[in-house]
Length: 416
Image (cartoon, rainbow, N blue to C red; front, side):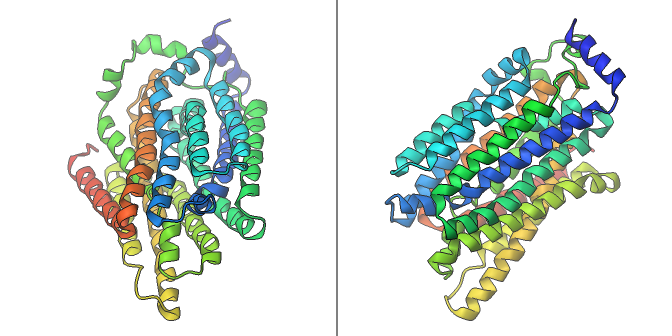
């Protein structure tokens, strides 16, 4: 029996079966992203515990470690994509999450900064579950429900990081960072079980058989879709800004005067606020798109993100009890603004790109978008780490400039 026929019978017998897939993807994404953010926002502190004392070197090691995984994932995405077409995306996600269970456990036992970089490098050879889940949601949902499906999964990918840093901050303060890596491995294990048990790859509205009807989809034909190259650039820029805070924000929190023992907790609160408001941005994006065009939502979200980055840049000042309280309050407000802007713009960008991809080309189209996202995720920590070695504040000003440029380009060139 062909894949197309099998899937068609699945739809006929249970027209709502796709909702189970979305639930599985959403729950697994939540577990994975929660587990990841138990420890990764505090990686600069962990690097410091491994014997690196210079702030610039801590930022550099952190940037390298955070950036190498998505960098390798972006390079290997075409190969994994071909394997996914042959064996299914479900097994690719299972492979990725299982590798994180093993490697995150190993991370708890490292003794040198280069050990962290080495393990993160190995992770890059097997990673990619987060971006794949967006494509799986788009393929599982009916075409008219695709924006909502994408938004739900991305909301889970934001709510997880809203919860993770708070849990991680408490763990770091009570039992230390090493046990948090083991807890991260357990979160990934639960996500692995959810995908294995609940996700049915036969339930899809973008069947492989449909590709033959639309013709062979090449990389060049994907890029020719309306607004597609622009959306690739926007997604890259949004990910670049979103991931630029990992190597520098905890260091910035300590630099403005927060006591060292409270840095993990304060940083965790800021990351959580940013992630939670990002989830709200994802969630409400669908409603915004019913009232406004994608061009307005994306451009407005980028402009709001620029304002949030500017607030972070001006949050420093003369150290003192009263000034410190003001600085922390400004950073919290900045995190709220950043999260809302990036969240809304990201979901609107994926939805705008997905709307022009033919049903039979979802795999190719979202694969290209995934590469753009991963390149942003990979390059940002490298650049932020290098820039942070010279000045932490310059990272925030660079984010302001990039988001302002995105808002201008989208508002002036995007076709409604």
